[in-house]
Length: 223
Image (tube, rainbow, N blue to C red; front, side, top):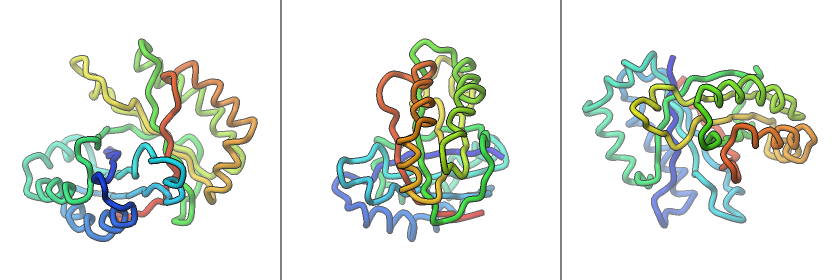
C-alpha cells in the first residue's frame, strides 16, 4: 500500500477544542467515502502542547491506498471535492501540505490509543542528494534513535522520489514517528544519553535549526 500524509493547522482564531472536535467527529464522514480508501488515521497534537507556544502543526492525517494509481483516481471526483470543501470549515488550507511516503518500520511494537505518538518533520541538509539523505537516515541514524529508552515503536516515512521530479522540492523529505506508553516516557527519553547521541548525528544529514516536533494522540478512523 501507499500512504499520504497531510500536515495541517486549524483556521486562524479557531479554538483548539473546537478544531479537534470537528476534525474527529464531523470530517471523517467525507473522508470515509473516498473510493479506494484502505486506512485512515488522525493524530491530534496534545492540548498540553499549546501551553507555552503555538505548535508547528495541529496534527497530521494519514490515509492509505493500494497504489499511486488509486490515489490519482481521486482527482476530480465528487467525493474528493466534498472532502476539500469541508476542509475549509476548520483547516487553514494555505498552510496545509501533503506528502506521499514509503514507510519503513525501524522498531516493531504494538500501538494502543493511550500512547503518546511523537512526530518529527525532517528536511535534509542543503545540497545533500536525496538518496544519500534517505540512506543515512535509515541505515545510520535509525539504529541510534531505536535505542531511546522506553521506545515502543519507531517508523520513518520517506517522501517518495517522484516528488522530486522536474526539480521539484517538497517541504519535508520525511516524517519520523515514535511511540511511547505516554508523554512522560517520551519526554524522559528526550533527556537521555541515547537521545543526545541521535541529536548529535542530526548535523550529518538534517538541515540546521530545530526539527518541528509535535506529541499527539492517534485516532484510528478506518482500518
